[in-house]
Length: 145
Image (spheres, rainbow, N blue to C red):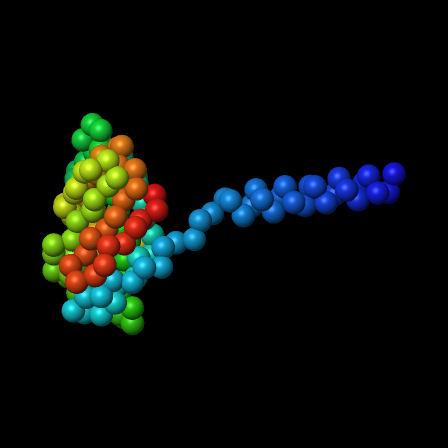
C-alpha cells in the first residue's frame, strides 16, 4: 500500500514537472552586430494588428491584411543607457525576413516604447512556417514563433 502511494506521488511530480517546463520557452539570445554595437533579440511577437493590442477606434491602429500577421522583433542595444538615442530605422536598413513557405518581407516599421524597448516590424504570411531574419553583415538567424 505504501509503495502504491509513493508510486502515485512520483507520477504526479513527474507530470507537474513536464507541464510546467513546457509552459514557457526561453527568449532568443541571438546577437546582431551593428555600427552602434550589438543588438540582442529580447522577444518575438506575432499579432494580427499594429501596434499590438490596439483597437480599431484608436487612430493609427492597423489590422494585418487578410492572410498576413505582424511579426515584431524586440531588440536591445547592449550597454545602451538610452534606447531612444539611436535610430532603429538606420540600424535595420536592409533587414528582411524569409519564411519556409517561400515568402519574403521587408520591415514596414521601426521604433521604441518605454516598456518594451526597440522593435522592427514585418508583415508576414499567416502560412509562413519557419522564419529567418536576414540582417546586413550578420549570418541568418532562425526565429522561433
